[in-house]
Image (tube, rainbow, N blue to C red; front, side, top):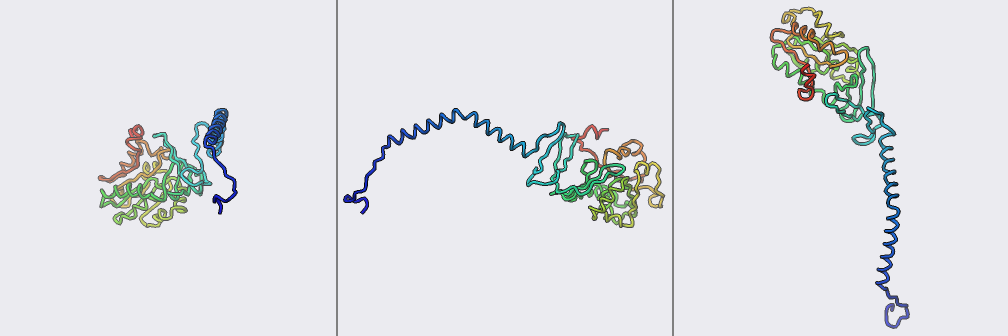
Length: 286
């Protein structure tokens, strides 16, 4: 049998000292090579890493621009993200979108509709986010129900702006209202609501709602709406749901608010959205 004293197989003896010396010699040689080549290896790794970063973010970002990679926030998207800037906080919010559905430049503003991956459809006017399909009710319920809970006997309400239909949608839930006058300057926004927010646009079918495509500053100044005999033609509430730039600047003058006050019933309420008292102190004060 193999390994028995009677076999004639050769025997080998391992010299542990020689093995240790060989390992030390090899390690010394590898160390010497690394010491000589290490700066070059580091430089090569830095070049490769820089190229990978450059390739993932694009070639260059123009001065005074915010460059956002397509894969921001998760898996890659083939559509350019929508970015909303805030001049008050000097920040930008990035929304991942699956597509830019529609863009129309009306006589007053640029109106766009995006399909986003989280908020659903979003309405953007002149680059500013106006409404999201997912959580629009947070804003519209607040501006309507908070106001009307103080006016349980309200009969007539004037809505200024609100072309997306969200405010009027909440108003028609109040059975005590006899008349809802809606003044919106841009018919394109109304059409966008009909095309992409049908639940909100459905409020137009309520017989108590009358829509006027007109500059609201002109509407209240000229008091064109006829007296119907309810509250002597006054409004129990005026809800201003407008942008605060561009064509809406005429809605931020002393004359406009004086005209609104003249249209209010004795205990009427004027409601409008406003900048954050903490973030936009200068604009709020003005």
